[in-house]
Length: 405
Image (tube, rainbow, N blue to C red; front, side, top):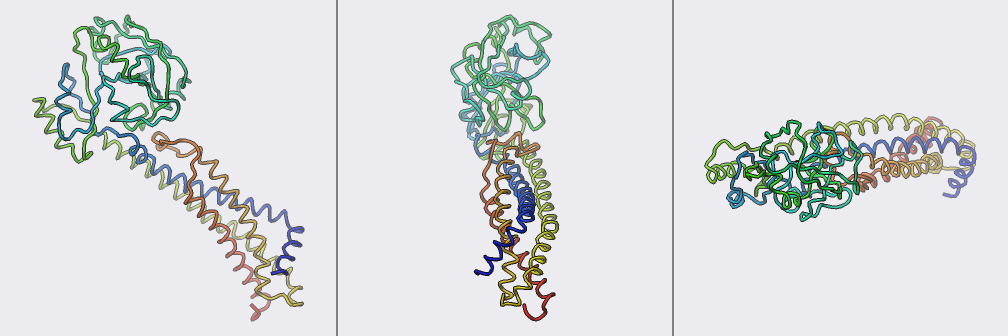
């Protein structure tokens, strides 16, 4: 291999600019393909990974009935976990315009974010369920309103008597006349079924369960007849919906209770993000095919021109095998450098993925090291370039000296 190494040292001094351009072309092509494939894999799995970490609710149960007996529902064999929330007008966020519906319904127990809808914490921490002055927000809330972890928000509540007078979902412009809570944002949280929906609504804020624990009359009214509904996690998931519905009808004596199938929403989200992932994967494959033809031409021209330069050495004993490797070593080393740059570029670009709807569900935003994609890319690119360069050299040699290859 000494003649090959000697030739490469000479060729590198003469044509280093060409090899540098080739390495950059390979880096751009490889980086684009690896970024697209890794992004597609990440986006396509975002919903499933979020569901796997958050103990998601299966269904919303909405009887909309004051004084509803949720303990009887908790005792149903299909119920794995249940958390209640107050549906009536609860509070006003002083720092936000009154027409912005960013405040989530107050939780009426501490099961939420513990046994059900256990939020993935993107920044900060979960709220203390014993404190009324802590809230968490969604990523979209921070982007929309510029308020993040550590910032203060003011929650203004209604007096119990005023709460009784308010219509459901409508404060009729009545100013809050109850306690004022100087709360602090302690975390940015993501869960499947609340705060950030699939449709971007500007995000949401969720108070700690401690708000209800300390100010229940201000949320339920002096009569205590405020409406409390629930989110439920079922053993067996969506397949247990029919049995749960039958049990709910039995313990409540009602057949008109609305059930919102959150598992169906999750399935729809998987379909949407899966379609986006397939489209991104198709783009990556198309970019790969285009790179084979476009970059492949540069590799073939480089190898063919090297073979032409090597003809004089063939006359003094350079074998066809050595000629092929001498023609291929430059593009191969350029491919090694280019693939390394491509891997680095794909890793840096991963911080912007997933894109589209999947970005609302990603449980771990930021850089993502997709080892299968990056390792395969780092190995496959130099191998393919080496094979292409050797093949181009073989054809060039065959054309120049038939029968000597």
